[in-house]
Image 1 (cartoon, rainbow, N blue to C red):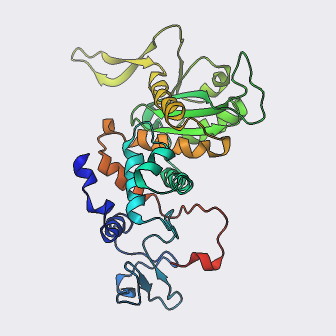
Image 2 (image 1 turned 90 degrees about the vertical axis):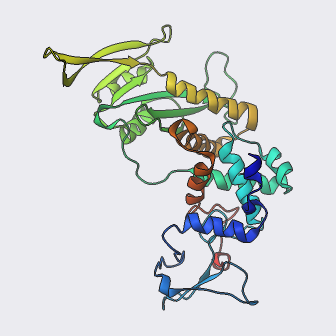
Length: 332
């Protein structure tokens, strides 16, 4: 960690910009205004009249200037890029998160700016677009829900979690990747569409004994339920491989939701111990943060540096603003 803090990208704006350019423009510079990627039609503007890092697109229908931060969560920020990268590394290296108050003290910027900066980085952690189905080729997928926080205006319930926010998570046991969703409540109408859209029909679904999974589980190749009074349950599956004596090899599958519950454990420790307060409208971004770190964790062979690189690639096209920008705000 000491060596990391000596990195010039946290001290020098030029080094920080070059680090970001190398990750955002992996295959060369791209104009964020028109998408031009022809390096012969992009000119670096130098001299006293131009600030460092400005480029000119020479496409006849474009001719606009840009920097690496245009059309990213960094766009038009007054915070130095060195501070942005320091916050980026702190968030990706902290397993249970790091509070905005802590970052504001460490980086010497206002709490208000730090809070918004961190939400921009969480937005960059969100994965958009269509994702491949989980549990392909018969893999096991754990599905479970948990409850956290407090829904504004809902009276606290004594016996159940009706006053709390509901989080649904799906975990592919083969890849170790997780996807989490903030849902209105744990009902079939809320859960079923998400499960169907994200899990392959060939998958082995693993859930608890909640009634919402009874009919839904029948849509998949196999549905195993775990009895929480026991550690786990098992089933035997015949494989296509044969033993030397010609008999088929039988594999014992473990039915458990322990892996997804382990993820919930880290998530809740971070939310309750580090962040402490989270409004319902921002919960989806905190889920994106914990999903991102879990899906790029050390156990999967991802280092802190590689995790930071992955987040840097995700900043493009995810600008988050206090208000909708007008045309003059879209300049470099």
